[in-house]
Image (cartoon, rainbow, N blue to C red; front, side, top):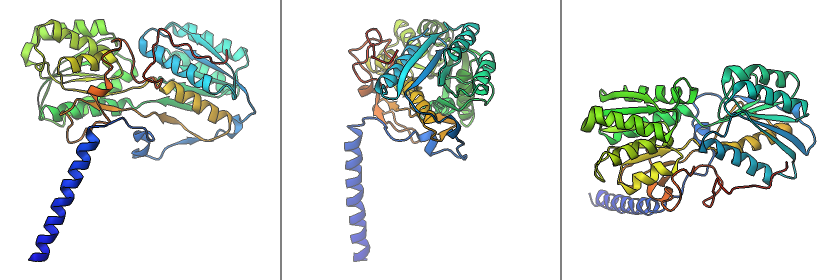
Length: 382
């Protein structure tokens, strides 16, 4: 009996020490910096591409065909690519950049022009999957390897696709919201662009999770074009229609999430009374959540993937095998006191939000805390 008592005392002391260490760690969460978890936890065999046939001596001429810089996220993607090129001047002779202004026909012409200029490799962020597929095939047939970033083409005829997991984003946001709400309540879903693959994949994944909770009801699903202004307009209409029936707002991005929070504030909802909400990437979303004491979870879809696409491109030209789909790392930020059984914070939202920085700042560019899209001008090889 005495032996058992000693064991219990040891166990109790150990648990107290473990609890203390966890509490200390919780006070200083600084983010996840390891290998992307979607790659580590993948339940399928990862497909790697043999790139030995593309191996050549540098320095290289790399072309980047961008769909557009029509929103602040896409500006961050461009800056991340330029910054990675600047860091690899010893390997990159020239980075040629085109901007299609969201015009798929212009982007096809842009890619053809880059091919005529003799690039060693193409990085492409397609305006649309179908329109860019033939010209990407043309590049591959000509022996010019193509690395896709952010968006893919409709076929698998490319070397590698650098992205973040839309399904993981949608699922994790929904799991957090369902658990934070105790498995019951009414939610509004606000997606990005209707028909755009990232938006539809995120919504489908979230709906699968919500379906596991019989007490959860989706009051409405609307699209926002990933626009803060439209997100605000949509949410204002939902507040007018449903009022205090709304128990949670699931957004697939902080772009419309910021607008949704503005709508609640302008509708007169008191601090601490706005329902739980999800964000991603945009400073304004997490900043408003902190200022108005809103329970929030942010799962980034980081434009830092632009820098990763340059790293993958250089591996291809070095003949190193690369994943067919490379999913970049993303941080999970949660407001203090709002972690759930399934969703823990890599960092606290209160530490992640930049309260002294502009609302339109993208936080997940990988370009450091002093990044300012208005003044950022990396010295990359032009």
